[in-house]
Image (cartoon, rainbow, N blue to C red; front, top):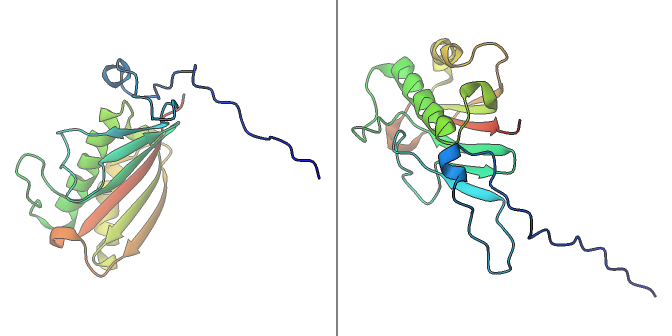
Amino acid sequence: MKFYNLSVPRLTHLPFYGNLSSEQSKTPPKKRKDGLIPMKKVIATSNAPSAIGPYSQAIAAGDFLYVSGQIPIDPATGNIVEGGIQAQSRQSLTNVKAIVEAAGGSMADVVKTTVLLKNISDFAAMNEVYATFFTGDCPARAAFAVADLPKGALVEIEAVVYTGK
């Protein structure tokens, strides 16, 4: 029986700086112990609430940015905004936008969102606010009703962003 080595050669000589903002791309990523350069980078900004658990605000991986679900926390106060589903939807999307922009993208680069609603009857009101953040070609979207959300939020929104040019 003959065995073939089908492994892919290591491309450690090729730097990966990702499609990040100019400030983030000035510093090359650290190499792993095996000498490879990681294909993912943590994105964090003070313009959106800090993660409230063991996760990142977003991860840039290759040509994509994966934004964690954003609940309507005002980053200045650390509290859920008051005012119902429209105010909370606006804050959640503002948080998503801040993270996307911290990675050098824009809301026009969002290709997919997932909206979690505590009450599906809030869909139309959320949708009115959502439409103000996405003009032109809107991203693909899924929306679900859930039993509960962290901190008593009425909505949580996550996004996938294409950062390749």
